[in-house]
Image 1 (cartoon, rainbow, N blue to C red):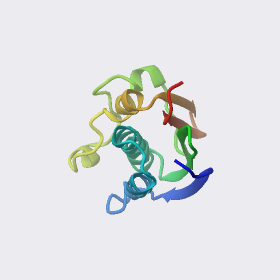
Image 2 (cartoon, rainbow, N blue to C red; image 1 turned 90 degrees about the vertical axis):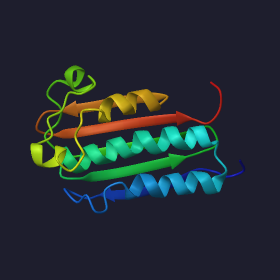
Image 3 (spheres, rainbow, N blue to C red; image 1 turned 180 degrees about the vertical axis):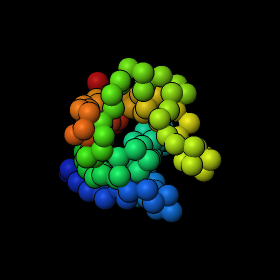
Length: 144
């Protein structure tokens, strides 16, 4: 790949499931156009989508910052939501705090954080109750 650093920011809407997932879809298209390995595209798209949907459901939206260079894809999702009181519990498959109304739409099954961990090469979550959460997802494009 012969490009420098590509940076793109996205606004993640609050409680709007009609456009939720557009940021991750846009990044997926960019990666395909750049010729990124399909497995890396898949890992990026799934992990970013999960973080994006969590921001929509739990945090009144947020911001997604994406950086792509020849070595890695870095996705940073920031929100000013309620924070995650027990991150270890929230990382367990099936654990959810999504309301019934969200689950009835097919979201909030408690797989978001576990899927981020599964598909990211590196996952960092910084959260503070009452202040918000920053999720950093890294997918490496080269062998480390």
